[in-house]
Amino acid sequence: MPDIFDVMAERRSVRRYSSEDVSEEDLNVILEAACSAPSAGNLQAYEIVVVRDRRRRIELARASLNQMFMAQAPVHLVFLAYPRRSASIYGRRGARLYSLQDATIAAAFAMLAAHALGYGTCWVGAFHDEEVLRIVGAPDDRIPVAIITVGKPIGGGGHTTPRMGMELFVFEEVHGRPFRHIPVMRKLLRPGC
Ligand SMILES: Cc1cc2nc3c(=O)[nH]c(=O)nc-3n(C[C@H](O)[C@H](O)[C@H](O)COP(=O)(O)O)c2cc1C
Image (tube, rainbow, N blue to C red; front, side, top):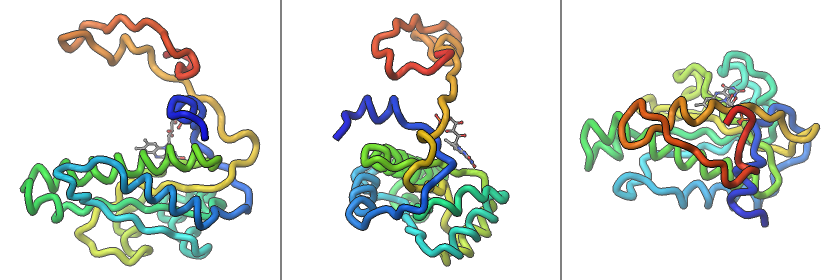
């Protein structure tokens, strides 16, 4: 199993998938990883809909501004924030912020786990919320946060995207004073970083 830094360094958004399925065991590991993520008050104010049905995947791709590459991926994980669950303890902050964060970090854990198991993923955030809720049959008080496509990558698994120089967005003590970054783990650095 690769270590966490290898996984972070090698992950790329994958938008070409082979027809090979995600094994039942791997899918369960990916979901276990998602559920292991931290959440505000440990409330886990999110839900995950596992979509494997081909027609439903095509519908999700259409609802995602016709990003038809999505349909190639044998599994879609639809992460929904569940604002009311977090609001029960944290009120407006739970509903407006924590539930979205809970869903987001769970999705990030799932992505990294999938990569560690040799799958490619893509985080899809451009979609019509109402359409996604309808397609997966979710109540309309849920908020779709991300659709993570999962499948075996074709063609090396996505190209390397650059990153902004850290001095532009990492600050030292006060906002606007650039942090002096000393490159340490070169494999983590993307061009421009
Ligand atoms: C919030 C969010 C929304 C995104 N939405 C989409 C999307 O709708 N379609 C897509 O192909 N990629 C989407 N991406 C993937 C980004 O384009 C990708 O992460 C970015 O270009 C960096 O490339 P990398 O993932 O290969 O490092 C999204 C990523 C995030 C975090």
